[in-house]
Length: 278
Image (cartoon, rainbow, N blue to C red; front, side):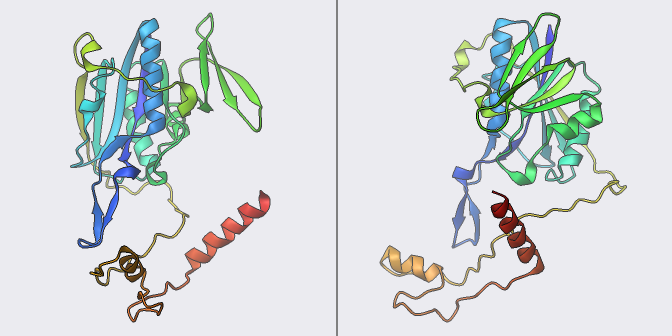
């Protein structure tokens, strides 16, 4: 029997996020499973339907955060482990450490997760988890097949029309892309057997500073100035007012201009260099 651990992360659904100009904040934020991780879970369930396997789902959330784990009840999962931590889950290295410490306590053959993240701030790289477990890792895999003798053949696309095959020996961590398998509708009444056992564990933040320096170089966050909500009868006039421009084609008195910063200059320089390389 193959023991499979699926690393699942929760993030906010982009289609559910809306900006409320009256509250000056976000509304309708709903949690959803990362798309690539959901395809990895679907692949594990498809493998279990044809072979003998034990599926364990591991998730890391912030302290006090509530996730709808009932959405996973329709999948034939044997065990779910929910790790709650005081640390910032945007730190992928800290999340990888929590996952690795929990996986070391369990038997495992194959670790699988998504190679892509819908939220760049909460990305859990499979390589970081594999380094702490000291096992082999292969990412961006779009096809997996089991060979005789226990080895696996994984295919990954590289470049235009180029596909490379890798032979992987278990235990290993495989990062997949959404094309690994299509998502299928699974009615709840077709799921046989008992529900997955949910283990909830709380991990306190370490007082010692991390042995590394985390530097984040990303695009500057937008600065939204909520000055006044327009009451104009026409939608075009309301949009112009929110943008800081009056509907009579003159600049509004409350319009503000963003000032350049060293971070913004560094971001523009990196973008120009990437465009020149392309």
